[in-house]
Length: 273
Ligand code: MN
Ligand code: MN
Ligand code: MN
Image (cartoon, rainbow, N blue to C red):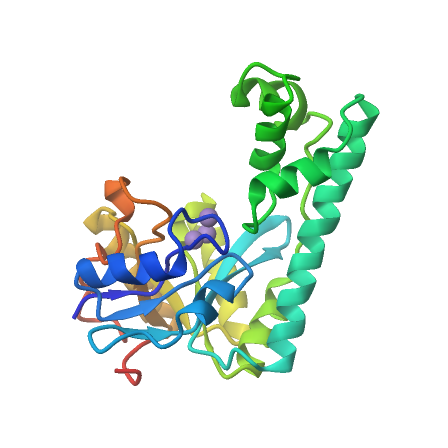
């Protein structure tokens, strides 16, 4: 069975509409899919029926922080109407809007007006971020390239580099639990932590109610899979897998290209199919 429990649509930073995403997943032979847009479930809500060949479960990739590190948690197979979860998602959106307005305010001090409205227009319903500001600055002729927009105004340490503040890990795990979902620590090796620090994160994650680790994230080496499967065993956590697909053409993150979990793993989806 081909399973993909991590991918993005145009509701966040993916390039395919939810409908096209599900179509592509079907064409790739995916039989169980979760659309996990960043902090929104609109993509999932648009296609929640799935199809006869493809079972769709609700999903979201929640941004949060653990100490000073930004962490991503996948919420899976929750009740999308749960008021605690819905309020949490609204707060995430509000946090993004406030950050974007702060970026715009700072750019205004440099004499660039209308960047918030401009960036919103360019984002066209997807989640507003610095790339949209960069494209607006380029469109208005303030910079000669996207790279220059980041180098001068939006990159690390520049005036438009406003840090996004996210809720604590335990708080977002609480939203997923309230909605009856499973919480999975997304791509544990992407945070570039030492092994000791990663184990501390996983211990806290489990303590706060987390259920599983994303053992497979896109195309990855067997070593990584084995290592993460071992961590699942050690912490008595379930395992998940996903492509983290954002757009076609990226061979390391194609829908359904998730390989097989090691036999020692307890799949998070065991009771879902
Ligand atoms: Mn993304
Ligand atoms: Mn992520
Ligand atoms: Mn992702």
